[in-house]
Amino acid sequence: MLKRLTTKEVYSKLENIQVKILDVRPVDAYNGWQLKGEVRGGHIKRAKSLSAAWTKYIDWIEIVRSKGIMPDTKLIIYGYEPEDVELVAAHLQKTGHKDISIYNDFVDEWSTDSGLPMEKLPGYKQLVPACWVKDLIDGKKPTHFNSQKYAICHTHYRNRDAYLSGHIPKAIDMDTLVLESHDTWDRRLPEELKQALLRHGITADTTVILYGKFMFPDNNDPFPGSAAGHLGAMRCAFIMMYAGVKDVRVLNGGYQSWVDSGYEISKEDIPKNTETDFGINIPARPELAVDLPEAKELLESADGDLICVRSRPEYIGEVSGYNYIDKKGRIPGAIFSDCGSDAYHMENYCNLDHTTREFREIEENLLNSGVKRENHNAFYCGTGWRGSEAFFNAYLMGWPKVSVFDGGWFAWSNDENNPVETGYPKK
Image (tube, rainbow, N blue to C red; front, top):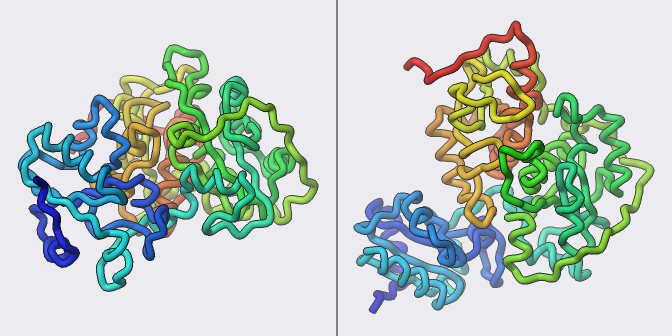
């Protein structure tokens, strides 16, 4: 029989580092969305996110261990439903965990008492759950939506079949190439961005919801990015923010979260409505993008850094990471913060269901790499997709000055006068 704790008992253990509190609700609730009408959104201070939905994965225990939860760890589990709490507890017991307590009064007691500490992702409103999008297309007015118009964009890279094979109802397709150049992989020129956005019915005042479909990228494919659609959504989010779209949202988990919610799938090729006036000059937020000259300045700056979010094999020069980049190595002086396994996966930023990882874990990964939150941090990868995802996460966490070094390794390595390092750095 699991011990059931009172609110007072949970509060008394908050500062005990020997105890871990596990939040088994959906990650969107953990981030701040009030999915069950709780008075305050967010999670109990210090709680770790361990969604009950993840128990379906065969490598579930690897998620648990990655969060520092070992068999001898004292645990308190809470969620929305007692059934979810007991499900996770049972899984933990099967893997050797013995000291487990449960707490079932989060909604009725903890969230209603402003004296009990809670935390949330500062920018959670820009990372929306599937139910929020469902309300939107059903004609309802979801929480934190105040716009007169919206556009849902299914992003892809030269892969309309990803869209036509199934998408969210009312979503239009958007090829990332309309916003970034196929030659340089940089964002397109302001007039090109303006025309591309208008052709998709997007103005500065349009709320844009972006998502993509993960289709298991294969590095042997000539265009692996064609199967990494949700990573492309992050790229489009950065460019739209740079251009001046005031309300850019990303569907947490992309197409997979829509499927996991059991919602209707459409195969209709939705026509695009065009606009004629973007409303403001592009770029409205030029500070979000860093190009090669400013990147070099940041390398010499005392309060600025280039943050390399490539994989370790790319960083040490074993591979370039891309079939269209020949040169291998890294930018000397840049801070390395591992993104994951390769150019098309972001395991250090994503959960197994493609939702964004617990934001404290992302922040810890960056800070442990030597990144300083207060600096001007310009994230980069090979050509901008992973750099855009790291940027978007830092933006959601409320970091004060974040940018994307748009050219990344592609721009740096194309100039033979730029220094390059390989191998493991000397300490």
